[in-house]
Length: 256
Image 1 (cartoon, rainbow, N blue to C red):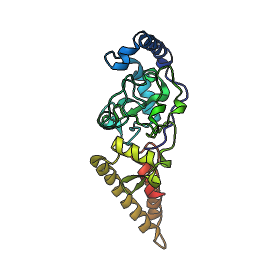
Image 2 (spheres, helix red, strand yellow):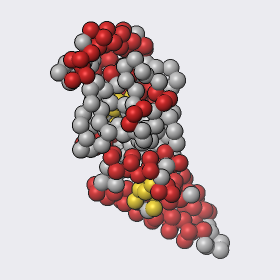
Image 3 (cartoon, rainbow, N blue to C red):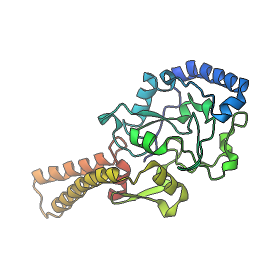
Image 4 (spheres, rainbow, N blue to C red):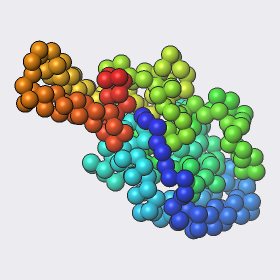
């Protein structure tokens, strides 16, 4: 997971159609609070707004086609999911917990609440989860000051994940035992077996490149060709640390 820098200006569809739909949802909720709070009545969220092409393109660009959470290249195998950091339909505090209705429906079309994620992170792991340090401070319709909440999940679009999680080889761990880092790793499955295997494959490439670099740099009188190889190896290692590289957080931890 790395820090994501989204454009400050939201895609137009969110500030026009999305804004109007949010107003309509507020009116619907006000007309039947009991129905929505019980879960009997649900919002009909418009995927054509929050997952519009212009939204997805903007997120793909800002995230370098990578999942906001695991850093896998999403578009290698799927189009990716538009993930709502704060769940829109319903929310629960922990994996075995009860779903609470409604979710953060007023954030369904908010740019600050949208990320691009892979199917595994979004559907198999995060889903409706959004744990808070203090459950009593969860925002509700009519009491919507998000600054009062203390989310356990790291939001890569608002804070630097490197402050909370780090890598030892291919293994992701909570930095200094940080509770938010651990909660994010556990709930999003950032230590799932297949993900560790993919990171290990990338790590072995980095290790080999580094060994080759050290070997060439130890030559007392390298030829011009060898000097060029040294420069090429340094460039390849640097590329793996760039934000557009898959698993760049791990690469930076290994090489820095």
